[in-house]
Image 1 (cartoon, rainbow, N blue to C red):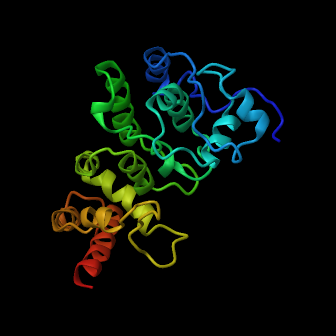
Image 2 (cartoon, helix red, strand yellow):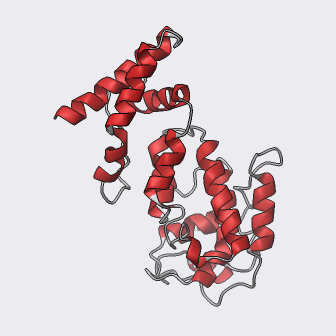
Length: 247
């Protein structure tokens, strides 16, 4: 049984997410649901008994970790998810390793990315969060950009929209991010990274090996205005795509 401690996993006051998270706690404010939807034998009994006794904002982070480690009703009620969601959004954006299983499953216990599930005010929070999180992507430990895309895809955001958001970035940023994930040391054998949490890895691979992206990288590498180091990285990425296209 983990020792009781102060709640962790909140965004800092200077975080770009701070104001949005504050709005989330207001918009999703509601009474605690009658149960947590988790299997009785999967959670620490003391945590399960105390789960909803701290309010939404002050739920201890290790309570959420325990809940994510448990099996839950595959048809988890919206009442449970909506109660937990602002705390979950807060924890994911905080920089802590949450959940322990990986970012990819953080929002997938309910179709969070389905606009029809939410009121206009709720969807504004959720949609803004998704766009900010992807646009403000920061590396944490072994986290890859694909992991974050997968997190939202697993939560039922439209995959085309997610990749359109990414590919709207300047080519320099795309080269920098994907080279870091696919080629940068200590990677010994460069390869296109796809997290195992995708239900079908062919889905992201379709975007990563798209010919338009391949040609964009070649054009960028050949542009005399491109810094030599970035051109080298662009060609390395294009070479990986070419191998997949011809294999």
